[in-house]
Length: 277
Ligand code: SF4
Image (cartoon, rainbow, N blue to C red):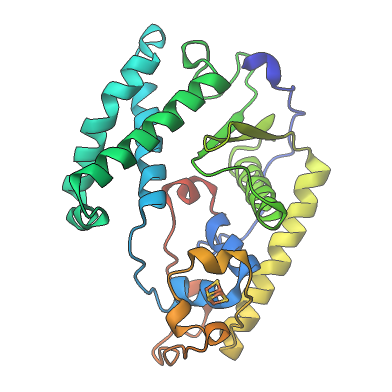
């Protein structure tokens, strides 16, 4: 895969950028998609029941991660499949509520088989015996890879996916002083790959967009005004029952919020942890 990377131009040393732990790529994506969803997740911190699709994504990620713990020659489809059941058992032991995802054993078996199909699709996209998880090419270029277990996004989500990739690239540039050579999203649902080769001008534009987004989020916070923006994401939203776009009423905004959004701890995904700036 190293031959698919492009040499990164040497980056300027990181500028002084205020640390904004309250904005992560995923949560920024939430606000862009629907400000009210952002509020439910970040301000109200409402729980969201686990969904089979989301948990399958977690499982496939975990299997791929452990696959790369193996010596290169051991990263085979058989090895990946052999990791499925133990990884699922580990996840279920860590989060006992996952047991309620399935109505029967047959459902669970079919769900696991679906995860196995995604692993098979992964092997049609690349051969992990010849790539490195670290994704740093011998020349030092950084390649960022993310795996999605859905299909490649329809237009509405593609913009969000690309924005998040740019955000990751920006965070890496600012934290490590190097523009990543390539970011790659692999959709294991349908075998599509989206690749993005960032450059400094692009990332500077992304930085301006992140700054503007931050100001919009802060304004919403200060005005206690988070509007619903219905779209396809509503199909997956766990909060329809309390969303005005579906005839519901949101709970009152908590009255003990910190004065500044910067003091609100934002729930992050593991991936966000490396990308927050
Ligand atoms: S149901 Fe749709 S509009 Fe309402 S909060 Fe969820 S994503 Fe936003």
